[in-house]
Amino acid sequence: MEILENYKLGKQSDSWQNGLAKTITFIVTEDCQLRCKYCYIVGKNKFNKMTFDVAQQSIDFIFNNKSTFNDKAVIWDFIGGEPFIEIELINKICDYIKIRMYELNHPWFENYRFSFSTNGILYSDERIQHFIEKNKTHLSIGITLDGTKKKHDLQRVYPNGKGSYDDVVKNIPLWLSQFRDLHTKVTVASEDLPLIYGNYSGSFLRKKCVSQEFLFSS
Ligand code: SF4
Image 1: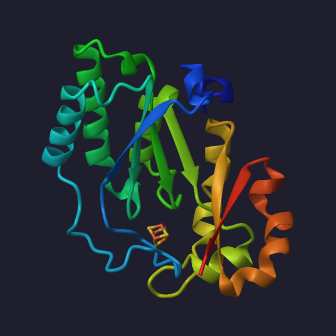
Image 2 (image 1 turned 90 degrees about the vertical axis):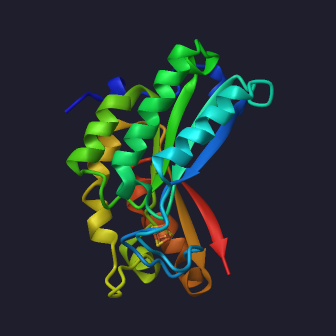
């Protein structure tokens, strides 16, 4: 396994910390393995997904409008549904972005990152790990863990109602070994309110010094 230093992020430019990066988001799929009770995507399906052609046209538009997209740095952000379900498409899109930035001698070539918010279920999959290895110096990956098993499994469930905590937590050590300055989002719904304190103090991620961002859903 690669040592932690090899994956140190945020080294490309100070502008990441200064918030000067343009964020460009690709919604690559409406599919997901889970049915989190607070999820804003209704009608999940395998059919509504981005094609490479649409992504390519979007990227070309951005590079053809340099006066609009003139920020010092860029975050190419991938969300879903669960974005890693579409890892082959994402890999193709990222390759195209890198090639075009290089061909255009674009300032972003020295100043970009690929960003992901994932449910973490596929994190240790060989295809995901290959992508991480290939792009490791330009990656930001947030795995959503809602805190304790009790809290997480109350909301983040499979279609059959089974909680997903165990399937996510088993991949956390690998994630922790590969990245630093990690963060995760914790969504709190109304029925979770009694669990907030225990969730914060007992969270596996807090014990591993991963910052938790709390979101509240009605
Ligand atoms: S993992 Fe994300 S996309 Fe999937 S159901 Fe949960 S909140 Fe929705």
